[in-house]
Amino acid sequence: MTDTRAVNQRTKPSANPPERSRSAGAVTARTGVGDRFSSWTNHHREMWRESWARFFASPMSSGMTALVIAIALALPAALQLGLTNFQKAVAGWDGQPQISVFLHKRARENAVQSFADDLRGDPLVAGVTYISPEQALAEFQQSSGLGDALLGMDSNPLPAVLLVRPRGSDTTSLEALATRLRDSAMTDSVVLDMAWVQRLAQLTELGQRMSMGLALLLALGVLLVVVNSIRLHIENRRDEILVVKLVGATDAFVRRPFLYTGLVYGLVGGLIAWLLVSGGVWLLAGPISGLANLYGSGFRLDGPGFTYLVGLAGGAALLGLTGAWLAVARHISAIQPR
Image (cartoon, rainbow, N blue to C red; front, side):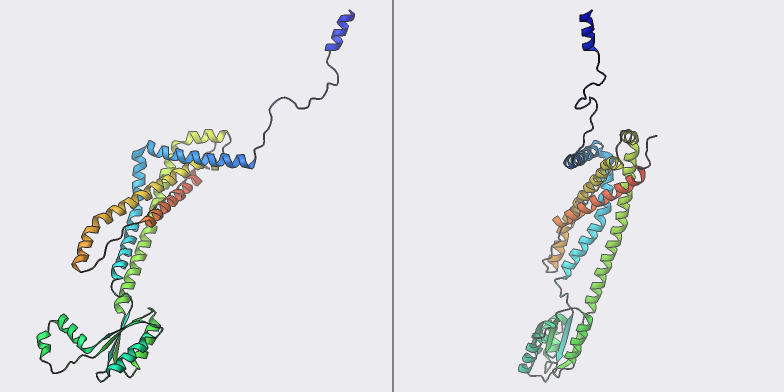
């Protein structure tokens, strides 16, 4: 009995058991900033790869969407490239206004040369070309076809001419320079030839504005295409979104794959647009070069280089990302588990 009591005494739980250092069960772990950043970057990397995988998983529908984006972007890009080549083509002509100074017939050669040297030193003048009466007569005979008739004249009726190229194209400065030349005792007449330059500048500005307006309209079209495509993606994955939200996923976590999908659509569309513009330039380069050779010009059509590639791909990717954001901002928040 004594032994039994002793055993019971030893096995009987104490009223005040000793306190354990840590209780058994679930333990809440805290994640550091580095772990959160690593998880965030890993998820972005995973969504980037998954977006490409989903793009190539349905090549027909994805390719059609990217092609629509490419055509919408290729049109304003081709127009802008055409304007750039047009400006390059007319750069061979003197793009600056020109002032033709007709000198008096009685002006002496040394006085004309001194007057031309003074004009070359003027800060408003970029250059001066002297055309003697003999040179003017020879050019007129060649261009007019009246060489035989002019040979019978007793004297040369054409005066010496100074072709003055202004340094700037400001209308006020040009008018002031022309007025100062008219007041000179050496000049008989002064003609400011800038009408065609103004017409060319107006046409170029009109083309640029048309290109900008077309680009804005087609960019809006790209946004609508991406919004509609991402909306269909969201509806197809509605059940998956509900399950992920049930386990505690945030809206930012849910929208991330769709944002990358829109980015991929835009990026591929921009690359295809660059290829379309490059193909168009390749088709037109030969005929345009042949036409330029007929006019004695060395003009060559410039294609879309690396700058166009970066601009089209980056701009299209930004449009795709923006369209995807607009789509998910409206539809993701409406999908809530009940």
